[in-house]
Image (cartoon, rainbow, N blue to C red; front, side):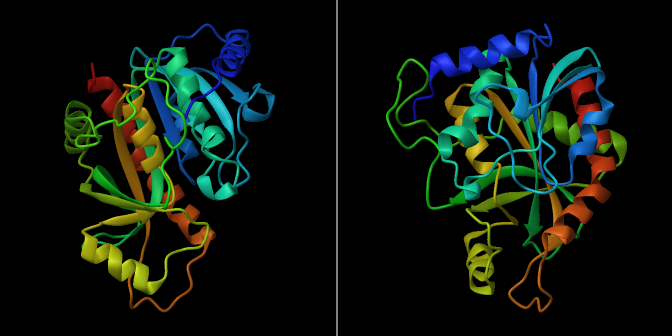
Length: 274
């Protein structure tokens, strides 16, 4: 995939009229997790709709602001809400915010999302450090022409989750007494939730949680040379034997409940990471 450098330059030029902050960290917040942004000091929030070329989310629970701020001496740009592949706008727009973060100078991505728990030891509201992923979306965000000056045609994905950042996240959880699960995230395109047979398949594949985002960001983040760490909020438990229908409201409600711990975790992480 090749993103228009002119479009990115136009976006950056506009953002520079709102703030001169040069973020080191990029934070992506999923469904119901927007409360994390409240920890930032000296925040500057820019609605997606005002930013040239920036995609606007159509999903409830994704407010849609790019918020700059500082915490523990670190400068952060936060994507409060994301767009998804299932919204039908194409990979270029879905992944555009990552190209913008790269152009802003971001070196590390902290990605959060809500996902259904497949591992029977998990509970709704748990936080899970993503250790690896399985892409079952039926597509890849790097499909299309490649610019070798930006990244390799065939990027290595053997270690997409940065070991140093993951260790810092574990250390932060331990210091706070937060139980941080670890596991493999499997990604489906959505927007329909998984069938019982698909969940049974995911269990056999070794997945611990199932979601509709974050995996594309892990792929593109690595492609662009940014360090990457992912934390998933287990919003509900899914099982081949579940009888109750699953709703988006259930997912967002559980994410809201976990948001307090996630905020504390990311704050401590930023205090610890170099």
